[in-house]
Length: 341
Ligand SMILES: [Zn+2]
Image (cartoon, rainbow, N blue to C red; front, side, top):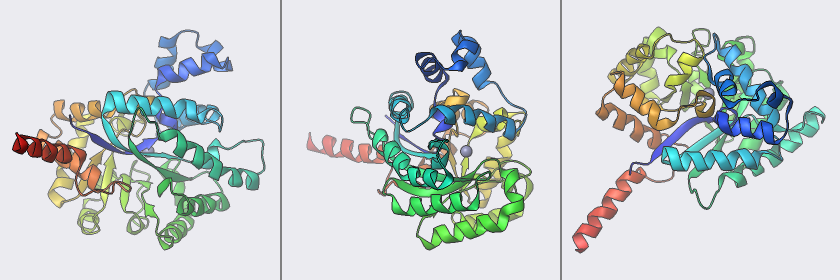
């Protein structure tokens, strides 16, 4: 069995619609009255949006129900699904811890509570019956103040549960605070943190200034599409693009998945690695193996390229401490067994 690595998945967007709908009904939330039937809820939750901002609004719905008390409930179901249906051996889960703290508290109390949230997520991700090597990426957020984002970086550096930091919240919104985010990434690197960042996802999110600080690039699809001259440098720095095919259709960034062919072709030509990811597998109701299959059936990549991307995912994983992906380990185990017979 092939086992996969998922490098780009949001905690908020990883709740599949049925789990969320059941939770809303069990907890008698106001939303449960609005959606007595599951099918209507699924349609509301998974339908494509016109813009990235409109799409990100949905995250706030999930964030509001993911609290210190309920996180273990959602994470258990997430790990179970990832193990059973997606064959994940490795998972990096990302989120903004501040947005899971108690909104009634003051800003500084909420900052203090972030460490507890990271601990809860870390403990809940280790499920004995569904073992997956996992780690957390903490996201700074374009709509949060500087002090909060700086505290997120500091916390990431202190916690054994965290492997990296990211910036999220819609890439069009960093422009007016670009210096601030550059400074925060410099700070992160000074603490030996690993880095990724949501940039070059949309046409309004192109910031060459941020690229030198990133070890991986969250999406990055507009680099090969709009600024292919940068690819050489991206390859030289050994940066990997985290490409999440379904997202671009759900956010209105692309009209047709076939537009991704140019992204893959130009990256392969330039020697830039791509890891195929889901971004928000729950919100899309699309799991990782289906992302792979969809790229194959639309002739965007072939099996050889797919394997190269799957290898790249393990190679660029921030917390996979082995030279090989698990499939190669199984192959050598099989060889040893055959030799023994
Ligand atoms: Zn994302």
